[in-house]
Image (tube, rainbow, N blue to C red; front, side, top):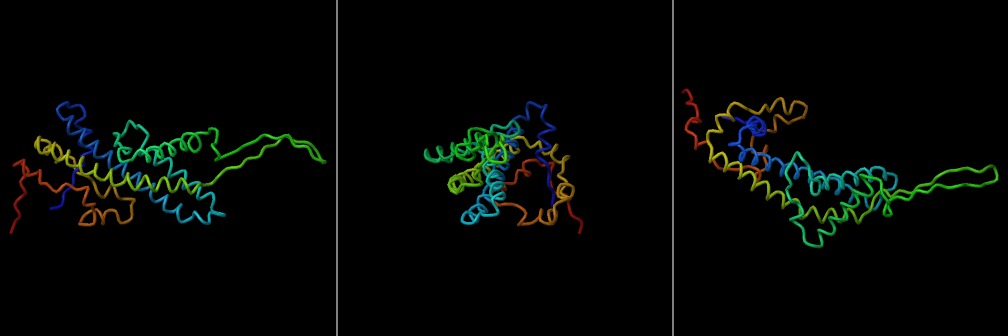
Length: 243
């Protein structure tokens, strides 16, 4: 029998129940780790594309700038921003002292150049000019903006090599926390049974999503807890099959 239940929805339903707080926290912590891991994977994809372009940006400068902005902003969202909607996964715990300094470079780039307009730090230079020439004077302006910087690619690549496996380990630990809470409180299954996850509705706009959900290729092994918590609750006995 194939069944799947929505633990995020179950946690929301239980939000007013103080006795369910450990379970709710465990679900949110696991979801946060998965969310951060997804962000870092997105950053890795952008950095890989930038590395391919590093020797010949040329006419594709606007693409490089877009990829760099995406990589830096999403990296900071995963590793630095304190979001209300997800727990801090503590990405910088994976870093050496040197990498923490490199991390600060990326955060400063996000804060002073890419997400907010600051001094530029060499990334942009804008000047207002008074121009005098034979056919008339004018007030005008010039600007110079850097599309990308291979040093930033290299910094991000190094940080991701440490951050991604670190967060993967967090995923496993936090999945086990959910499993532990379900083991302690098997009565939660009575609620969970009433909140199935609608695979078809969730993946209705994703080509192949429904077909790929079930089966051995549908899940990443390290994100899946293999214990059988359901046997802790006799009321969840498998239905008898007719012969």
